[in-house]
Amino acid sequence: MASRVLGLLRDQVFLWTFGAGHAMDAYNVAFRLPNLVRDLFAEGAMSAAFVPTFTRELHAKGREAAWELGRIVITGLVVVTGVIALLGVLLAGPLTRWIAPEYAEVAGKLELTTLLTQVMFPFLVLIAVAVACMGMLNSLRAFFVPALAPAMFNVACIASAFAIVPFMPALGWDPILGLAIGTLLGGLGQVVLQWPALRRQGFRFRPRFDFGDPRFREIIRLMIPGTMGLAAAQVNQLVNVYLATSEGEGAVTYLGFAFRLMYLPIGIFGVSIATAAIPGITRHAADDDLVGVRADVSQALRMMLVLNVPAALGLIALARPIVELLVEYGRVSPENTAGIAAALMGYAPGLVGYSAVKLASPTFYALKDARTPVTVGFVAIVLNVVLNLVLVRSLSYAGLALGTGISALANAAILFWLLRGRLGGLEDSRVLMALGKILAASLVMAGVAWGVEHELAARWESAAWYSRAVRVGLAIAAGLAALALSARLLRLHEFQVASGRIWTRVAGRLARRRS
Image (cartoon, rainbow, N blue to C red; front, top):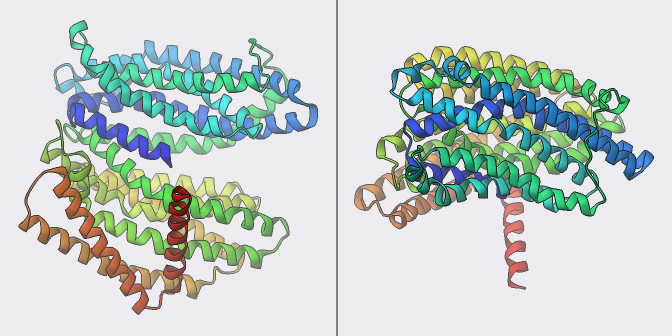
């Protein structure tokens, strides 16, 4: 969660420094290319395949055997990602012309994107090693340092905006190059932070090119299904970037910041609920207790709905003032704010879908069914591409956001429909009743919040950050009060339970700080 907040702060600092213009567009497209490869190989599929194999080796044969596997994996990652990074540097020109052909119409923009791509592609090697280190430390139950590693990346990027960017013009370089250098330093920082912790555990690295090792081949075999599943998602992202680059200056940046802002509540309401529910669901599934699985999934789904539906409608109602509060400073113009807000409103419905998938997919895995989530995810991606191709014509970049939001909802809806058939229902009447009530209460909340903010903005037009903070804060408070009252009048039991748990957690943390 801290990493997500720092990631949002990183993007805020970037926007304050450069605005949402050609330079930030070039940076976002350039970083997208190595990031896609990272998501495809280094973080998702590789991590999911490596950690179980390393853990099994650790418990079956001891640390030295596990270290030997770690050496082979790190060597293999450096070789593979090094080759990909080298190709990325050499082919950066054709790659950027292919993914962002419209940038050639703006003097210097395509060339800047190409240069940034060349600088940042080696990030892939660093993050691959960092992920391997993270997997080994987590397998050894050393969780603290790996948890800090993503934060290190964001801290380095933020620091680069203040410590490197100002010196770029004196060296004859574009200031945005400082952010690319900061990105590399952030990847290096993740490795440097974790390496001493690994050495303290007894790890010593020596290159091992034994790629015929059965354990290494097992990791590759396990990676293939996950990589195929992720490949469709990466194609989808490439299509979105391609379409966004033709929608004018700032479109890529608007979509990137809006998506991060939309995704922030998922870490609070989506991941936390799923994380709490999955162990119980897994135990019931292991015992072939489908009644228990059904009850746990139904309860978690209802909790998600009563928290995420209000969050989504709240983002739609207050998109413009929230974005104004967060980013309309420095070089960010009101036009930039309007662009980000439009994208945020398009993405907002997806908040419910993305959160629900965090529950549905692990439930299928607990039922020993990995094929269904991958298949449904692929269908949702195809739907996303089709929607984006249609909606971008009438809604520009906001249509890309809306298409993504709708496809996320469709992904969740299909998964739960199939899960319902698998489990003989999901206590359907209770879920539908909770959904109907929270939707009604959330519409009241959104209307009240929008009305309060609109009235305050008309009477108090100051653009100072504290004025905006007070307006947004009062609007949120009024909306939450309306939500709580509506939920009480509608006798929405799940809302009382969820809000009670949140209050208990907040009160507990405050009590611990006082003591």
